[in-house]
Image (tube, rainbow, N blue to C red):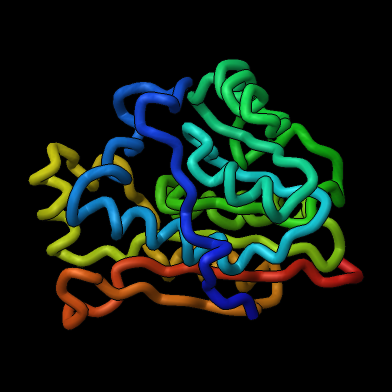
Length: 223
């Protein structure tokens, strides 16, 4: 089981140096006071579970917020995203001597060969799928993982206060989140072996209970 360390502290570029995403990307939230530390901590919990290796596939890579950290753990970063500009983001990180192989696509039908990756990483992605698609997503994730490879995912634990907080930021979360953490955990457990499950509490009001959940599952060696 991985433990969080300074090595997993999220390394961010200055806000204006990120390229290739539209105005709907939550990039800005990572730099806000109060909200920013919560957003960064979610990513750090996911990074702490990533074990390193030859290759990592991040599904929903967005602006590439995790790439500086992933570069320290993996020889090659692959990425799949529905809308981000893969070419622009690749070029931006190449200027920083970080090679990536990015393209557009969906977790439900991935353009990769079987047994390709040591790690598949999904940060705040799976909640956007409807519950009846979770099994299909994990079937694909399992297919592209090497035997013994890991999937690390992070999903919100929905609470009324969270819904209200997003509304104050101008976001109706009900239009974007369709699956709960329980839906995701159930699908992951049906396809893979659980290694770790981490729950994150609110740093502002710890008594609220968990607000985010990170799952770490492993593909069986003979699967």
